[in-house]
Structures are given as C-alpha cells and as structure tokens.
Amino acid sequence: MPCVFCAIVAGDAPAIRIYEDDGYLGILDIRPFTRGHTLVIPKNHTIDLTDTPPEIVAGMARIGQRIARAARESGLHADGNNIAINDGKAAFQSVFHIHLHVVPRHNGDKLAFAKGMLLRRDPDREEAGRLLRTALAELDDAEQD
Image 1 (cartoon, helix red, strand yellow):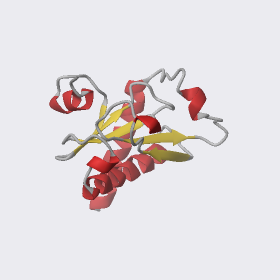
Image 2 (image 1 turned 60 degrees about the vertical axis):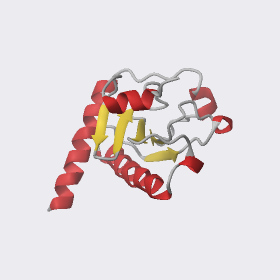
Image 3 (image 1 turned 135 degrees about the horizontal axis):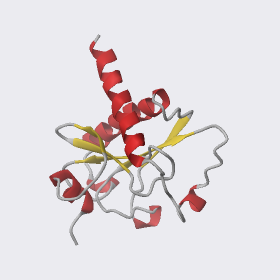
C-alpha cells in the first residue's frame, strides 16, 4: 500500500503545508485534535521510531519546537502544546511513516485524547495554516536580526 505521506512529499496528494525545508515537511493534520494540529514528517521514508536515525528524530523535534512556539505567538493563541510520536500500532500509529504531532493547547480546553479520537474537526484549517506560516516567517525574521 502506498504511503500517503510520501505522496504528499512528492506533491501527488493534497495537504496544507506550513513548513518545508530540504529534509522535512510540516502539514496540518487532516483530523486535528485541536486547531493548528501539525504533523512534522521527514521527507525520506522511515516507518517508526526504531527505524529512524536519531539525527532525523532530533530534526523533527527541532522543527516541532519551532511550530509549538509559532502556535503560542500566532493568532492561535496556544497556552501550551502536546508533542508526540506514536511509535507502532500499539501506540496508535496509523500512518507508518514516522511523524511528530504538535497539538496546540489552551488552558481549560479539557481535551481528552481518547474522546478526541472519535470526532476531530477544525472549522477553518486554511486559516490555521496561514496563522502558523505567518508566525514561522516572523520567527525566521527575528532569528536573522
């Protein structure tokens, strides 16, 4: 069965891209737990945490940290973030191309991940993507100053 993330990387499948460099892609989750829920994926296919070189995992974490900061500083107004890698089917991995979840959180949001697995919708994914892209660009500008 073809890998949906490899298809997205190749441009053969749609996704709302919020980050991209030579080795990684950040896209909005199609079934988000919260507004701005982003997946960081390496462009080269590996299956899970044990199949992925440590430097690739470190790169995912570095980008995830930047996206988490963007979620706080953007119009998403996140108060915090959950960062997770689901490693294997037993850990709820559903796409077998390693990816890191960045889930923006708000004080009092009462998000329960088990409940969130049943029905997840973001009413305006395009706007959430725009907010994160803008905040990432502002972070890039600030780092260059």
